[in-house]
Image 1 (tube, one colour):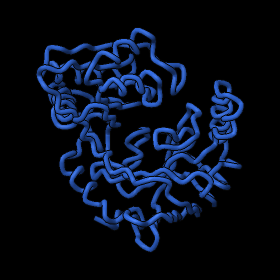
Image 2 (image 1 turned 90 degrees about the vertical axis):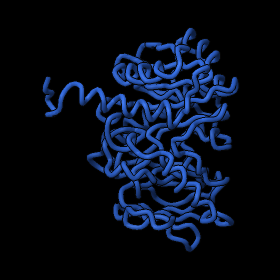
Image 3 (image 1 turned 180 degrees about the horizontal axis):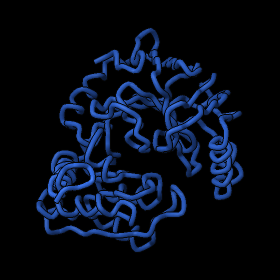
Image 4 (image 1 turned 120 degrees about the vertical axis):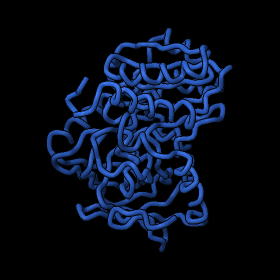
Length: 339
């Protein structure tokens, strides 16, 4: 039967199962004796079903859980879902909103689960683009970059749209976001393929202009953020800037007063390496791995060793950045300059 896209129904479902096979067999390397939990919701159920079907080819110890859509990012899953997460060794999360920064996910990780999360994943983004990368090859490329980052701490980022920012790294560059998640306690977002770092708290100064996307929303007008001592002191850029300010102010409600001022911490910097992610598509994970693109994260930085435990973490992407590490050019004109 022909579909609207011009292929057949069987062709389309095979494309989904092909990606699901990569997730199950290459990324997670699921074994026959392992318990596997797939968590999905009504908006991502088609992807969740394909992952369940492929996992069932490997193990019969498989459970598919449909949970209600969350009201906001970072909201804890229902208690029955959180309980069952603690009892599984492999967890695949394909939901509209991310569960990465929830206590339920953190507890499951402590219990030794390895977890793959695909927040906001839809059928098209599951079948094409960054999800179809050769993750074994990507792992080799990213791990081979380690020597580039040694003993270099000053980072400068600029862009044609007006970004001019510099900061010191506050930890090692993370080179494990390569899609391979085969050890207990590991967690990975898919599509994978980014290199990122914790900016030293208090060290960042300048201007960040987000001209690509914000949390998977393609921007019609750029966002400009003024940064002083690692904190956002002003944000401008039309209606979306107002909405972002409102969401961060709302997040303050659940934070103790001594931490409220940390809500606007610049929490993360990274750049994309996925060769199959060739353009911004309006997906909150895929846009971060755009090869030659860069992004900044704002809010909670505790996952990287920081002190801003504020429960909200949002990211925005930059087109065609220039990224310098000391005197070494990492990204130039939107292209990766080192191997």
